[in-house]
Every structure is written in structure tokens, then in C-alpha cells.
Image (tube, rainbow, N blue to C red; front, side):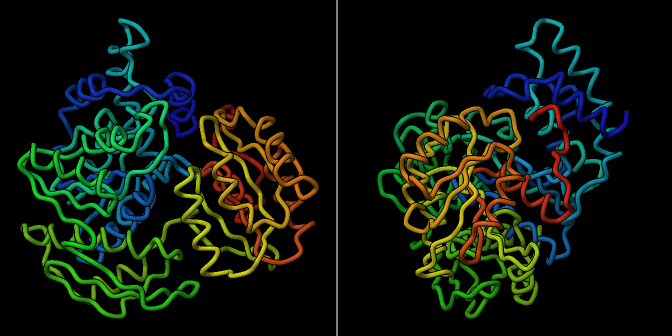
Length: 444
């Protein structure tokens, strides 16, 4: 099997276009594969926002402690290969194709009963990640939750430590309409006797997490109580903070990742690192920690890149809490500036509240359609944005045309691209390569 054939199978044969929660299919698939996820240590990272950044910080920190680290994230920005990395490098496409080819007999056998018993796209890619990490002999895997937690396909791991960043409104049609309901779904990743790190501070939400930890006879490490940070200075590509935890006391640590929220995410990773040091996995080293924090990168999250000498901010803010964080970051890094924005969302996103947070920072907005099947509400978003921004709004369905238009109409730098990780992936790849395409065209 070639890589392009693997992409075709994943997107055409499996249920890429639907969310199918539940653990029965993934457990059966992994059972047939001899449970590769049991071959290494695991950190399981959930939450509404920031979980990808936490995965990045932790992966870099673990690498700097001379560990072989597998990292599984979703969604990817442009290529499926981004989902599977070992020590920061995307695994070779030949290995992806080889692993999937070995799995297909199991997948098809499970699907003989009916389409409901065939594993979904996400379930298969999750199992692929576990097998890839086994074959590449990682010491520890950092695994990001896909959606929710309790019924997410990644929730078959028994982690050394779980992390829940925060709980905000997103995917309410699946997870529930209140923060408490959403929190109960995310708390499903908490395992018997295992520690939880959380940066959630809202008392009514924190109570849900604490109750679940108590029920599981585990332990909880909370921001502001068991570990804390202090912002020292904020500057593009050089953000300085202090951290105090159960073992570490650091003053003057530097983050290259931009965004005041990254101090929180880095602190969550440091707290988890401290817990891991209680085992025989690693011994804390200050110089390795400082290097890991500074070297960590996470594309598409308040990322600054340049195109034809124009500064471009790429931010995957795709829900109201993410938009609120983006608003705060714009106020810190670009105070008083109104930006030209390229904006597009996928279905079931609260684009009205997202735009309400960003309206005051927008001089001109171009609504577009991310090149992904779920961007079905383009015209609806256009209609609302035209009402909100009036003459300051344009609509161009093609995202590459929309970005080029933003270059033409901008009054000041930077240009902001946001609303969807898929849109960010489209534009980021275009800026870096000049290519107007997605990796697998038929999903558009």
C-alpha cells in the first residue's frame, strides 16, 4: 500500500464525516492488534482549549530529558503525518501505509456485520498511532484527546498522569449544554489511582473534576494551589515567566511560543513533568527544562509568520473561549491596532460569539470557506458578518483568494487568519509552499 492509497482508504472507506463516540470498536480493534498502547508510558491530555500546546510543551520537555517521545494530536493542519510524531519528527509516510495495511483485515472483518461496527476514521488513526509508537519503540507517548474524554477513542490508555486544561463551551451538541455536563465528559479520562493535573479554576467546574478524582482514589494538582506561575514580561517570541511547583522553582524561563495563555499551558506541562519524575521515567534537569520550554513550538496557535514581507498571525481559535484568548493576546501584543481578518468556520461552531470577541480589533474582514467538508455554513456566516461589519465585510469562498484579497486591502499589519484550524492549515501551507491545495482533495 502506498501513502496516497492509505489516504484514500481512510477518507473514503471510513466514517471521516461523522462523530462516532464510544469505546467498543476501538477496544476490539486494539485487542486484535495485541493492545500496542500498553507498550509504553502515556500522558493523556484533554480539555477545551490549550491541550495541543500542553502536548507540545510536554513533548519537548521529555525529549530534552533524553526520552524517545511519541506525540499523537488531532486534527492536523495540512497533512495526516502531523498526527504522528516521534521526537518532533513526522513519521515516514511508508510506515503509515504499512501500519494501515496490516490493520485493514481487522477493520474489514469488524465491518462485516454492518457499517456501525466498522471503526471510524478517528478510531483507526488512533489505533495507528498506538501501533506506530510501538514499532518505533517510544518510551512515552503524549496523547491528545480528540473530543470530550469519556467516550473518546483515545480513552483506552492507562496514563501515568492525565491533564485537563480547562472546560469551556464547545461541541455542546455532543457533550452537553452546561459546563458541569461538559466537565463530566472530560473527567472521564481520569483513571483509578492516577494523578490529574488541571489548570481549571472555575469552582463549580473544578468541583466536578475533584469529585471524579475522589471517586477514582487518585490525586489532583491544581493551578494556583499546587502549582503556580507569574508572568514577568510579554514580547513576541520571548515571553518570560516564573514557575513554582511541588519540586521546581524557576524564575526567568523563556517561551518562544506566543500568547499569554501559554504561561498556563507551560505550567500544566511542568506540573505533569514533576509528577513523572516521581517514577523511574526521568530525573528533573533544570537546563533541559529551560531548553524544552524555549524550543517548544505549536503551529497555528498565535503563530507569527511572514508572507511577502507581511506579518501574518495564524490562530486556530474555533470556539468562544479560544476567541476570548485571541482577543487578550491581540491586546497584549498589538495594542490599539485594528487588523484585516480572514475568517472561516466549520459547522456547529458559535461563530456569532467568536466574531463578537474579535469585532473591535477588525478593520476589515473577509469571510471564506475552509477547504474541508464540514465548512457547510459559509453563506450563513457571510450573511451574519455582512450585517455585523457592513461595508467592512467581503465574502470570498476560496480561502486562497480571500487571503490574497486581505493582502490587497490591508491598511496595517498584521493580517489575522482565524476561526478554524482547517483554514489556518490551508493558508499556512499556501504561505510556505505557494500550493493552493489540501493533502486529500476529495474531502473539500
